[in-house]
Length: 171
Image 1 (cartoon, helix red, strand yellow):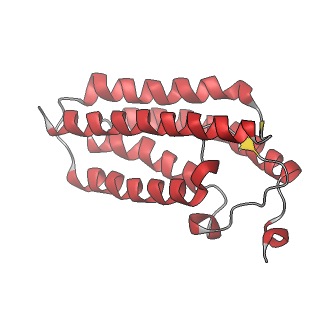
Image 2: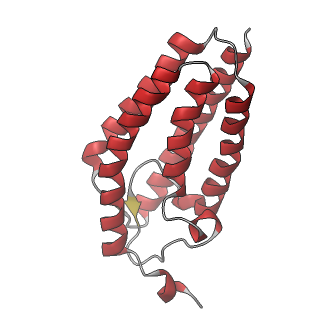
């Protein structure tokens, strides 16, 4: 089994585990009265990520691995874990808002508003680059940027409408 295949297998297993966690968190949040906002674009997000991973399997599984980009991708996984741990049961792949809950301002959210989207954008570029697929990195980065414009606007509107401001949440 090639190094690229092992990496892709690990990424695929990680994404499946994250979808299971996200579905569980979504269910719990909705049971607590949370609202899903702007669900119409979610199938596009899923399609984009599935196409990215599928294309990596199709074109990258037998490619040599570029160590610097692969290491950068590995470091991004630490940031991803930090984000998931910070949000805890509020982490989902959908835009879910629990009215009246304070904005999260701990962990990476102390520094940027949307760290998860920054990590995803970097992942979408770095993993294809690690597999010597620069055109794929460029193409999916552009597609992801277009989806993120819609998603971040919808999420920001939802958080402004339903979440308590961070200062109101401070003790």
